[in-house]
Length: 278
Image 1 (cartoon, rainbow, N blue to C red):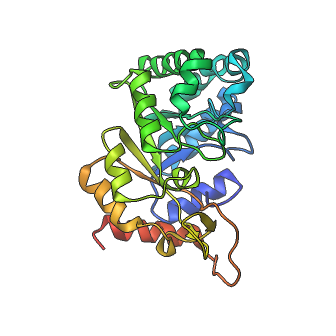
Image 2 (cartoon, rainbow, N blue to C red):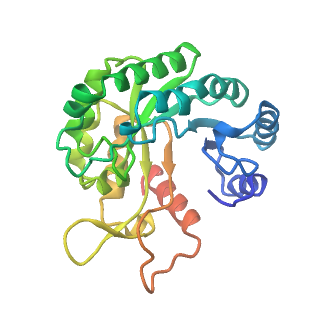
């Protein structure tokens, strides 16, 4: 988040008062899944030395298009899960994230769950196996909605997917408000309430609409976002749906004349003020 160099990033985040981390990439120049056990030990020590802990492993497992097929998903993701769990034993996250997969036919598919049931029955079995292995290893499992062809484009698809998954006590939904917006569902309190029973983790990014419609166009700070960040976040906090809030950089194009200086810290301060009741 704060710097491309992992140690420099830890130091800067420590200076900002951050104590809980979400690990994804940029760890000694590598993605999380590519770390050796020795590198994981080094990272764990650096984190512990700064009084920090790891809340989530934001893996990229299942991020591909399902049209690649079962053999591809097995080799690319399932076969790497054992190593991931070894890394987790060292870095001790509370949560391990899986991504909602994508489809190359998103523009044509109006019901992704029906599409899975009809043509990709193996996918649910793989998700169940991954969730069970994560839970059996002593970690929490979560599935996050992505953008760019994601199978999750509406609350209805998400609710039906989790019902089909049939792992209510073993996995919860990570709601990334901006990602679902990019898939066609603008973030509102109504959207949150539809999904609330599934949510266990909440991600925020800024973003502004253009001159026409409510599609995301411009990258922005949370304080200037077009969606009701403060109102929705206060409700998530009030409901106790997410023990931590993950702040990510906004998607979108750079807006001419917009001040992007210190965006990470500005977003952190904005969310901190919401948490304090501001």
